[in-house]
Length: 114
Image (cartoon, rainbow, N blue to C red):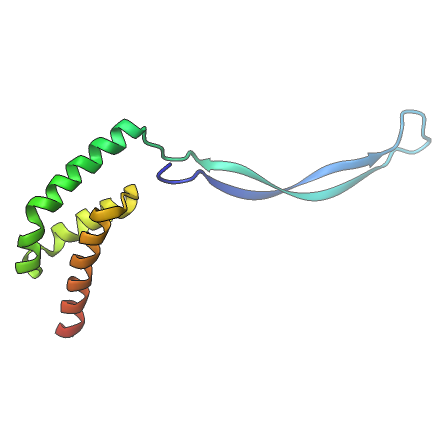
């Protein structure tokens, strides 16, 4: 699961007690209850598709890692895109380590330029 379902809360009145059919006067007792309804479905991906995406991004990282380390500023938009995808798909492992190294370098460069 890439993103869980989103729920929104709402309040409604629920009858918890009421008069019977033979009562002289009709009455009912209500209580406010907070309920939830699904606002957005979860975003899921089958394992086969997840593996294909992992291989695709792994190939990109392997082929461009050295370029990113040499020309970080020139590749900043590409680094951001790939880092976001790795985090979104929750790949972890060596890919996460390599992207973490590049992202740390980007952050260091940005902090020094200010």
